Each structure stands twice: as structure tokens, then as C-alpha cells.
Image (cartoon, rainbow, N blue to C red; front, side):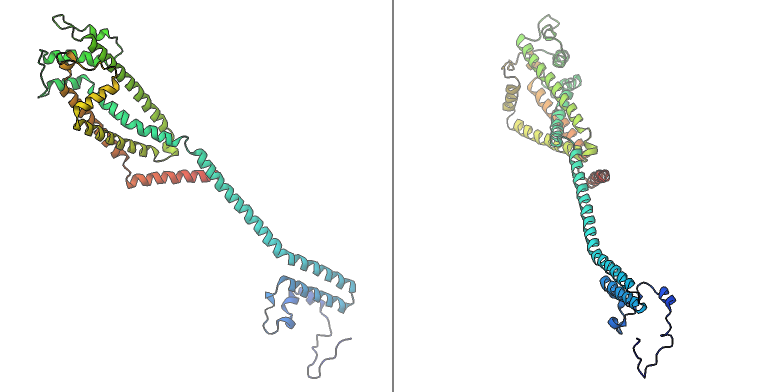
Length: 363
């Protein structure tokens, strides 16, 4: 039975006639937006939580079903609304759980990518990088000194020495031409693979033997030291070149730093040797021969051919030339490998490009 209307409040003429077709045109959230009992004058029904909306929709469906007398429909609608409300109440939690799971998966993937990048960087790092750099560094001073010694052990240097002003003359009768001839025999012998007869058969125009057996024995020892040094340092230089392979691409700056350090090591070694020679040349010369010629067959009389052909001044000049050549070579290496701003930037750019390529591969 409809409730009586107030005397001062006339009933709307359209209230008696239901318009079901209008209900079909209303949106699904109409009960929420017109619920004046809860929103009042504020009209902020759109700010309700999802479960409130579901309960409002359920009450509206139940009241509509009761007014039409369809109790089963109201019950079914209420159950459906309650189910929807349950789903909507559970949905924020599910979304949060899904978001956390997704973040976990992304975080795990990111951590996995970073770990893979680190593993790849470690695997991509050249093997024995420190050892390879050490080999390159040590090869620089040894190769530089051997190059300088080899330039001194040439007929050109011998000619310059014998013809330079101030070089002491032979007090026992060797002319400059004699010195050039016999000295060339001794120089060639220490650089070739000829037997000892190469020196023992050398005679003067008068038929006298130039080199005594003791002198031939000492020159044979010099020959062995010279050849083995050439072979060993050449092999070390080749190993250093092999160590350089791949370092420019996989370890930018490693070759430049190794050469730079090797050049400084050469200069330090030259300074130490120069100080020792300047403090006491005789002691330095004796110690040098005792180290490389422990047999003691390197001391001769002033009348022997080796002293007449290679006097003390010859060895002093040779040491000066060896030091000068080594300094020039070291200066060139330092100029090429000096860590300028532009070179450091190029090295950093190659490092960044390498890291970028590893990261792209890891993804």
C-alpha cells in the first residue's frame, strides 16, 4: 500500500505511472549517483568505494524486485550483487598482488640481466690481463737496449769510431785501415754462426796471427751471449706482440699504458746504469764482465789485439751511443703513449662502447 503524501507536498503526476523504459535507459551506476540519502547536498557519490557501490546496487535491485512482487528475482539479484561485491572487494588485493609479482619478475629479470652482463664482462675480459701487460712492459726496455746495442755493433759505427777526431791511436803499429779490417772480423764473428777458426785464421800481411787463442775464446763467449740475447729478446718481443692481440678491442688503453710504463722503466734503468758508470767506470766495467763472463778470460794485456782494436774509449763511446739511442726511442714511445686528454677520452669512449655492446647482448 503506497504511503500517503503530505498535504503541502503534492504528489508528482508521473509517480503513479511507472516508466520501466526509462529504467532501461539509466546507466548501471544510477543508484549510486542519485543516492541522496548518503551524499546529501555534497553530491559526491562518485567517490564511493567499490563495495559501497555494489551494496547500493544490490539494495536497489532488491527494492525494485519487491515492488514488482518478484521475490526470486530479488533474491537472485542480491546474490549476484553480493558475488560482484566480493569480486570487487578482492580485486584491489589481487591487483596489488599481481603488481608485486610483476615487479618481482621485472626486478628478477633486471638482476638477472645485470648478473649476466657482469658474467659476460668477466668472461669477455682478456685472460691473464695483468701478466700480458707485465710482459709488454718488460719487453720495452729490453728490446730498446738490444736495438741500441745492435746499432753499435755495426761496421758503420766502427768506421765512425776509428775515424772520429780524438780517438786514441794504436801504440803498437795498427793503422786505421788495419783496425778497420781486423775489427770487422771480430764484429762479424760475434754476429754469425761461424766456428772459432773464423778468428784464429786471421793473419797480418806479414803472416802473424792476429788473435791469440785466449782472445778467440773470449770472443766466442761474447758471441754466445750476443746471439742468445738476440734470440731471447726477439722471442720476448714476439710474445709481447701476441699479448697485444685483442687488448685494443677488449681492454682499451692497456697497450698504451704498458708501453708508457715500459718507456719510463727504460729511462729509470738508464739513469741507474749511468750513475753507476759515472761514479766508477772501472768498477762498473769489471762488474759487467764478471756477470756475463764468469770464466775470467776477459782480462788482457795492452799489447793484445783486442785491447788495441777496442780500447777503453771505444767502450765509453759505445755506452754513450747506446744510452742516447735508448733515450730517443723511449722519448718517441712516451710521446706516442702520453696520456693526453684526447687519448683518455678516446679510451673512455671505447670502454663505454664496449660496455654498451655487452649490455645489448645481455638483453
